Amino acid sequence: MQGAIIPVIADDRERKSDAVNELLRLPQVRLTIHRLPVGDYLVAGRLLFERKTICDLAASIRDGRLFAQARRLAAAKGMPALIVQGTGAEFHAQGMSREAIQGALVSLAFRFGIPVLRARDGRECVSLMLYAAAQTADGKKVLLRRPAALGKNKQRRQMYILQGLPGVGDVRSRNLLERFQTPAHVFTASIDELKQVQGIGRIQAEKIYSLIHENPAEYRFSAGHR
Image (cartoon, rainbow, N blue to C red; front, top):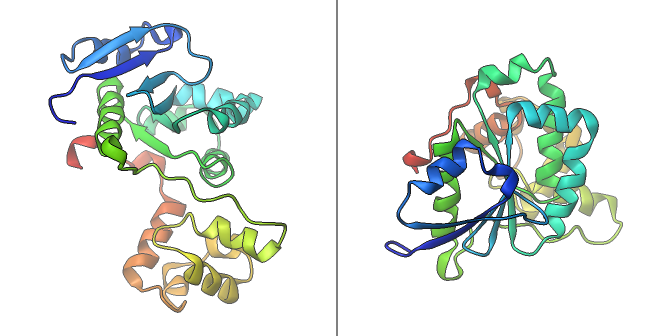
């Protein structure tokens, strides 16, 4: 996709955002601004991004708006993602517990199949969108949704939840359930407890633990390091 012009449609309510300002200065982007029925940015005709500042994320969790938006995003044509824009310090300023924020983001990933990305500012937000467009060009897909949970079998549904963890497929999710009995116990397990599960070594145990217990105040993401 190098050298190609990337079409981006921005919702008109994003007109004054720093992300739109960044898109306007990029010669490889053809930006159109008008009202989108869902999402804030449609990139390359196939990637649908909802952008939320940390303040807006907290407000949408409190009033339940986040999950209504998630349902519309998940049902929309194309590959959806949420970009949370802001710094770790801003999370603390919202007066919302870390557990409440993590619970909402876990629901987006596992219940709605919507990836959650982090960006410090508008420039990094745009870098993420354009990077995703490049990685999904020519049929390549990096923002993959797991298949829908099958049937009403409780064990299969629990395995489905665990398969969203790094490197956890059908066999390892089954092994985790055999060891811990419920997904909730997996989420509260220590690294040493996780690495005792068949097929999970220390490195993978650390990745799983880090994903579940990541502290937003310490998190720093840079698309340029990809």
